[in-house]
Amino acid sequence: MNKSAQTTASFYDLEGTLVSTNLVHTLGFYAQRQQGLLQTFKKSAMTLVKLPFFGITDLYSRNVFNEVFFKSYKGESADRLRFFSEELFEKVLKPAIFDGTFEMIKTSKKLGLRQIVITGALDFTIERLMDHLGIDEFAANRLEFVNGYATGRLLPPVMASATKAIWIREYAEREGINLSDSYAYSDSISDLPMLSIVGHPAAVNPDFRLKQIALQHDWAILNLK
Image 1 (tube, rainbow, N blue to C red):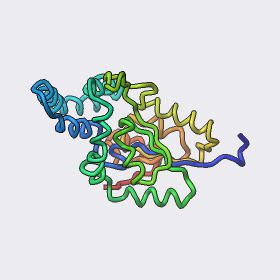
Image 2 (image 1 turned 90 degrees about the horizontal axis):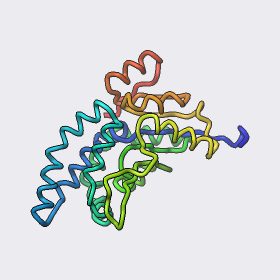
Image 3 (image 1 turned 90 degrees about the vertical axis):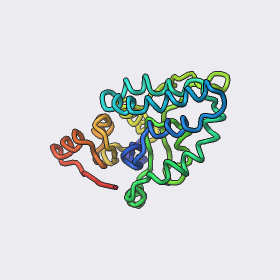
Image 4 (image 1 turned 180 degrees about the vertical axis):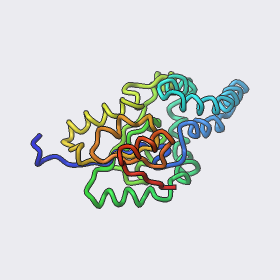
């Protein structure tokens, strides 16, 4: 594709960047809506007990986190997960949108940038949120389902760390996106590869390590809270 046909984009991480929730909050929401037999109750209780562990694991390693976290969805029906996704949006995700999120997206759109979210969240949990925020496209993790039930595994590619950067490069090549003139936003040091491949990286509500990197490289630092 010739250079004149290229366009630009804003690539966003989701959790901690546009909303204050994370994957653990979503799992907790589903766990609390377990109903029925004693076995189901026990599974719900065990999931809730694990939530602090998942948070610590995510701080340690995003890849390890993905390996153990999504196994908690094993045995869940696709119908049930989608049934509660609207309530998840209304009760968990919508109230968690940062005050400055809409203004940031609005400003980006005025510059003619395509709005794209790349997230480790599950696709069916954020579809409603993406519409609400006015996001053009998104790439998210996808659970594997067999006969309508989750196996606890993710379908590739698993959206985390360097994989996000690979996805962006492939997307840019396919869509004619000029990465040098594009933007990327994240709150986490785990997204450093994603931030490093665009011409305009920004640390949003950054963790300590990402803030230090941003200061060293004179990247924009934004606070949307």
